[in-house]
Amino acid sequence: MNDAIDRRELFFKALAGLLGGAIGWIPAEIATHGHSITEQESTWSIIAGIVSVALVAGMIGGMILAAENNSLEITPLAKRRFLLGFIVCLMLALPETYYSDLIFSKVLRAGGWSVDHPGSIVYLVAGRLAGWTSMGLMLGVGVGLASLSFPNMLKGALGGLIGGFVGGAGFDLIGSFSQSGLASRLIGFCMIGLAIGFFIGLVHQLTKAAWLAVEAGRLKGRQFRLEGRSVTLGRAEENAVGLFGDPGVQARHAVILHQGDSYTLKNLAVQAGTLVNGNRIETVQLRDGDRIKISNYELMFHLRTDKRVSESAAAASVPITPAYAGGAPVSSAATVSSYAATDSIAASQPAINPYLLDSGGQQFAIRPGASTRIGRALDNDIVVGDASVSRHHASIEYRNGGFLLRDLGSHNGTWVGGQRVTETPLGRGDTLRLGDACFTFHA
Image 1 (cartoon, rainbow, N blue to C red):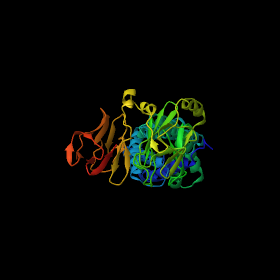
Image 2 (cartoon, helix red, strand yellow; image 1 turned 45 degrees about the horizontal axis):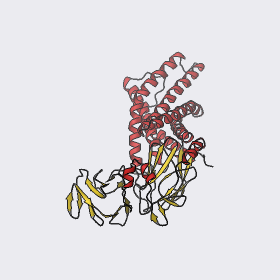
Image 3 (cartoon, one colour; image 1 turned 135 degrees about the vertical axis):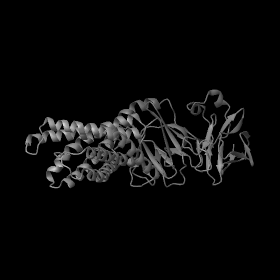
Image 4 (cartoon, one colour; image 1 turned 180 degrees about the vertical axis):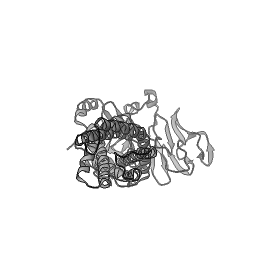
């Protein structure tokens, strides 16, 4: 079913929240030393309690953010996400826990809490429910904040709010079935983490506008939500859609641009290229059900049902333009103009699409009619994964009927024919060296 919820995301986010709650329970239990809420605690024990609960929140938030790739692989990216989520959620949880504790204490006093007053249990549950609901809200905001996305903050806040309420409601319910406070707190923290992770994932699934489903390839069965104005696809783990384990996929192979209700796929590779519905393309507006093939990966593009009407109307005015017709490259002024190239630039484009060929035989497209930036950072047009290459190393642009290579202040320099250059024209067959990375220019 096209609009099916990705159960894999729900499972991994719930599992991550559960594990975060279980791991965070350890310092929380050590800090409380089994104190009852009826005991008079010292200032230091109160501080320790606040910090320990904040650690639980940090663990839950960090684990949920690390589970964004929906797998058990502990990648460097997953580690960075965990650390970022842990720090952000911990910092947010410290003041939140302090004020929640104040509210909890006031609710208990209002209910005349005592172990011999059966009616006061309602106030106990209400106090904890309010505390964990606000904690869930904070965690959802923290997970969204760590991803630097305001929409994700709103979605996370809603999911965390619901998860905190559900988990908090079950905290005392679990305690009523267990004679051991130690076990009930462990189960309670796990349940709260699980609920928060599950509902954050569920809100994301229910509100997603577009996504890619992997139909073939190493990651078959995975889904990738398309969020933000630009979503890159490629072998590098920094891509929003990481297509790993396939040497035919380039580090930054393609990009999907989102504007309004339309999604446009742009090919960034030359050697393997990008296919849509069997046609090799350079730029195409995606429609619901389109099949994208990148090396051995096959992905299906999906739009939420209510987005398809406006998408079909917009797509009618943008034809699918194959990059190759009859085996020969085709230049399209309409395609170029949609990526900020003027009519005058389009008219002066070279007849043959230029590219760089590296020492391993891999080809990298040079954008006709626009500047092509080369470097190690993922936001370059050509991404070179070599430590000797600067983040933004050099650029190539088409000017006055020829190609111009410009160094962008790189550390190890830009070389042509053995000479270090800052700016020089390029000719067919010229050898380029950026740091230790070597290329041959073809046009």
